[in-house]
Structures are given as structure tokens and as C-alpha cells.
Image (tube, rainbow, N blue to C red; front, side):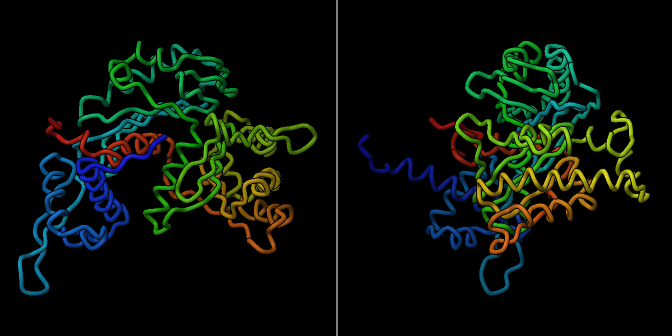
Length: 393
């Protein structure tokens, strides 16, 4: 294919996105809001060019100006720039084994609304569950202009067709999720959801949270512990999903006596090993471990050793040193972290030269919904001109 030179118009659109991303990156890192001069210094663009681009973004509702800051030297006061709240938003949604929910996030990263429904969805009817999700979306629709929607699912998603191929813990196979949601919700009909595995979207939210915490282009293996176990690999701040987007099904790797990692270190397995009813849920296990009950702490130590063994196999293949415990594992980290680390040090070939690290997720509760919303909002950053309040002629 013959390469073509960038035209003046495409260069302007590129720079428009560069300016918007620069302002939002500074805001996300909780630094002082930048002025036009700060943006020019950060991007290398001429001050006049930055000023014209900022004017366009402000007029189009993608940036907002704050009250002028008092000048430190002679001259006009600098006008700080920030992302406006409530102008553009995306809806991230999730269906998992014991809950479903929706979360509305705007361009400023503010959660504007959310609905969470706790319920047992194992063996559930797909049509009824998707209809319930559609109803929750309609509850939060009607606010800011909507960029798009996303749906996190605990299984293999065919992103090109909108079909959930397999979600073992839900008992779903070959479900046309996109069509069912379009029938259930006008919002989903107008904005077909981007489908992805829940661990992938949670890892996207975690990558953003680590960027806020000062890590530029982080690399880590995110491990999502729920009833099942998922994982996602982030390299240089970018998610690696594999050819079909199906990478990361670490819970189905075999670790002992023909049993999968999920069967020995999943939430239900840990509860049973602790002598607790799986229906009691995570709170019961955390409470028992907090009281120092031997059965609970022993169950968590064994689960951590098994989890570390399974993850060591992944680390030996993909060469990443940092592991992040998310989902239920984040709450159980005080008891899981050390046995996981011990197994990694024993079984990771490169451990003597690249010490494995185990960290706790920073992205907050139910991060896959946030990750889905962020994935859709990234479309605005990629091409802001398409989202200006006044469309291009």
C-alpha cells in the first residue's frame, strides 16, 4: 500500500486530539490545571496554534476554562483548562455471576450515575438477564450526550459478531447479546455495546488508575478474582487481548490433580475449604479470616499457593514482573499476597533477576464498568472533531 502525506486538515485534527489528551492527562494526574502556555510547552506546538485549538475545543464543549490564576510575573493571568463535567459520557455495564450493573462516566472521569443489582445469575436465562440490564440502562439514560456503551462479560466474547460464545459460570453459550440488548433497550439499540471480557475491561480501568498514580505506560498482569478467575495482560499501558480477544482465561488452567485454578482458588472453592457455605459470600470469608479462624486462614494460604503456581506459569510465558490482585482477591490480599509471592519466587525461572511483585488493584469496586466507559470515551480522544458540539461542515 502506498503511503500518503498528511494533509493540513488531518494535521489540525491530530493536533486537536493532542491538545485535548494533554489537558486530560494533567487533570487525571491531579496536577494543577494547565494553561495554554503549559500545553504549548508540553506539546511543542506554537502558542498561537494551541490557543486556536483550545478555543475550538472550548466552543465545542470538550474543554472548559476556569477562573484566571493570579500571575506570578507581569502580564495577563493564565487561564487554567480542564475537562467539563456532564457534557459527554459513556455507559459501562457488566453482567457477572452474582451481580449486574451500569455506570455512567463523563469525559472528566466523574461517575455521574450507577445502578448495581446483586443477584445469583448462575444458570440464569440470558433473555431475562439482558432485559434486566436494558432496564437498568434506561434508568440512567437521558443525561449528557452519549458517546457509546460497553458490556463486560465473564467469558469468551466474539467482538465482531456481538455473540457471547461461552460463559461457563453463567451457563451461557452462543448468546447473541447485541441483538437481545437492542430489543430490550432503546439506548442499546442506538448505541450497540462494545463487548469484552470483564477482566480485560477491569485491567483497562486499572491501567488508567496507575497512570493517575504516576506510572507512565504501566505493564502488569491483572488477576480478577470472582466466582471465576480471569486475567488480562497490560504491556506499556496497552491491553493485549490475543488474536480473538480471548486471552487471559487463567482460571481454566490445570494446576493440581486435574483440577483447574478456579476449582482450587476461586471464591466458592475458598469458602468450601474454609468450612463455609459458598452462598455466605465473600464477607463471611473475610470476617472469618479477620478473626484468625484457622480453617479460614489455612484455606486462604492454600489458595494463595495455588494461585501463585498458576500465575507463575503465565509469568514464565509472557515475561511480566508485576501482578495486580483485583476483584475479590483485592479484599483477600492481606492473606493471599505472601503465599502468592512465595510460589512466584519458587516457580518463576527469572525470579532471581527480576523479582516478582504482587500489588493490590487501585481501580476501585467493580472496575470493569469503569473500564468499559473509558474504552468508549477513548473514541473522543482519538478524534475530538467528531464530538464537537458544532459538527464539522
